[in-house]
Length: 273
Ligand SMILES: NC(=O)c1ccc[n+]([C@@H]2O[C@H](COP(=O)([O-])OP(=O)(O)OC[C@H]3O[C@@H](n4cnc5c(N)ncnc54)[C@H](OP(=O)(O)O)[C@@H]3O)[C@@H](O)[C@H]2O)c1
Image (tube, rainbow, N blue to C red; front, side, top):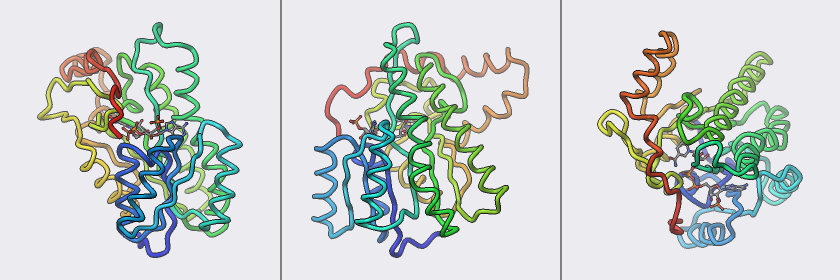
């Protein structure tokens, strides 16, 4: 189990959803927690919550799709707080419409935030981790990065990209004998509001996850240096299903109602921050 004493944890998209909950959990465990987000109201709320609970939470506005902004924010963070020990790439966006109804700008933004930003944050923080031969990179991907989902073509593709980025970078680190750890996170739907309206056909087998449960399990996995966490674990069966003929794969996807989960998607309609 990693010790968090004096450790600096950076969480992108940390003023909302599971990012917010993970940030509070890390801060309560004694870490110096730095939250990056583009949402000023959410950032202010995080700092106020930190102050009122006596926790170290520093909030910084950083649009992670802006490469130069990421590099500038990383330098500021190192100067004002210190070098990052754990980087959690959590910020994400979803369009939630069929491919031909999705504006080009939304597709580009999905890849900027969900995939490309992972490269910019790694380039900003990994050199320091390698120099110290310690640290941990966490990628919040998705179950949609393991299986393509109807209504999520750009999102799924961006999360498959996140999966590929994470696995290849992990291989590079292992090949080079680095002690820098990595944790890949692939959750099914979580009730944060980001996927408001989605339904699970068989909630007993494939439940919509509670944000508190998901955040707690992810933090534990990071602290235990788990290479990968899939929530709920039954989603791992996708890796086995891929070994079978495609018609069996398609039948399983139909059985679980994966192709219809997005039928009632609205996304976050209220400011449920
Ligand atoms: N919720 C789910 O069902 C689910 C399932 C699997 C995986 N995930 C993944 O888990 C992660 C967290 O999801 P969540 O449900 O907690 O989402 P959330 O509540 O919407 O939180 C995401 C946060 O990221 C911020 N963000 C978006 N783009 C950003 C940018 N360019 N720069 C800085 N911050 C940015 C958002 O700000 P704005 O509010 O301004 O957009 C928001 O505060 C995401 O990567 C998501 O893809 C979620």
